[in-house]
Image 1 (cartoon, rainbow, N blue to C red):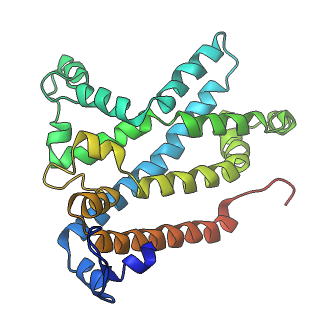
Image 2 (cartoon, one colour; image 1 turned 60 degrees about the vertical axis):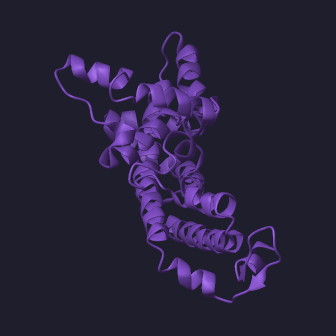
Image 3 (cartoon, rainbow, N blue to C red; image 1 turned 180 degrees about the horizontal axis):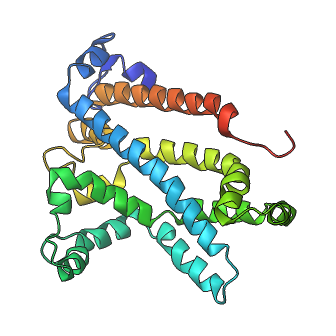
Length: 261
């Protein structure tokens, strides 16, 4: 039905009127459409690689044999199970430019903190930083994959005289690539649909700097009642996600290692 509605002028109340490709043509001349697309790609291209780096790094640290490690693992995993609404309200307080804890800590070192969510230049980095705080779910998957790597491989590397970074680069990372591929695709799909935090914390501001694609789609559908227009946006998003996912899958043959191959 959404595919049908994408070719109609539909305001939910009245019957849909067929308009053909008009919704798609209007979208390509809509400045907010391109702005929301840019914001979404910005978030995705920065957050997804950083989430892989931070997740793998935390997993490596939490894989060490240290007393009380179960407590540390629980602490780092907890943010990922906090509801988005609750975490958004928490981060609104943390990122407050005048009274927030983050700027208060920065001020100790004599540095004036940025405006974060009220500054267009810092609003998206602030949301990316908030997203990295909840990287516990992929971290747990990386941790499980690390514990599945045979110890014999590291023992052989020790015999050959390999140092720590060489073992990570030539054993750990290649063995983690299937899991990295999975988390990368899941993170990419989630990033393209980024909505809740921006809706609660900024409503798309300041100056449309956090108007993400899903938020603009929601506004068209349920604030302006342009359901046909929103349906066209939804199908464009579907095509973008499918194309990007297929591109990553196609490139995975060059960098993903599967044991036994």
